[in-house]
Image (tube, rainbow, N blue to C red; front, side, top):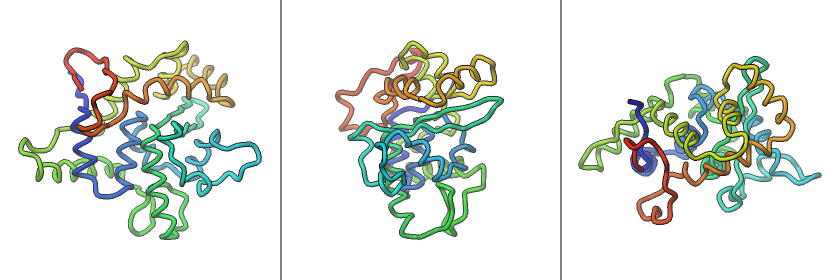
Length: 240
């Protein structure tokens, strides 16, 4: 049986176990994008700016500084990353909440004046190169959560969080090109995927409109903010 991360457990990890905006941004991107951990660790600010390209009006100054003080949650806007690869192209979105926390992290980072294009960096200003960083982050977060909860820390990991994303997409993403969009977000190596990518790479409205249908299902809410949440349609063994 596939291990699926529970929304309550993810909230506990973010609320109790994560100590920095950077780590919170990493976990929110992971839980709302389906991106491999290695992709997230290697993200650059240039890629983030390109992913937010459709935010800008014609003639507007295109820089992260010009949009990082906006509220993506209020505006319902999210980045659309394009991992260009002729063999198996991949496009990924992450939630408005993930982008908002990333902007908050960048606001602090700019004051440090690190001369580095990598989005996520360590205290020395170097890119996070360790492929185990996110796994270690989750392990530390779960240990911290265990201090505050009588039933201990939730047993979730990187694969469990990604599986949650793909289950939600398979069951709740809507639109004419649902399967093509999911295949493109997974980066599947197929002629059909490459053809679909060529059709939309210059105008990603199709991907954006499809991803918008699952944003509410991907949200990680606190206990007080779940009264009006949508019902997540997963297999009977998994409840949220």
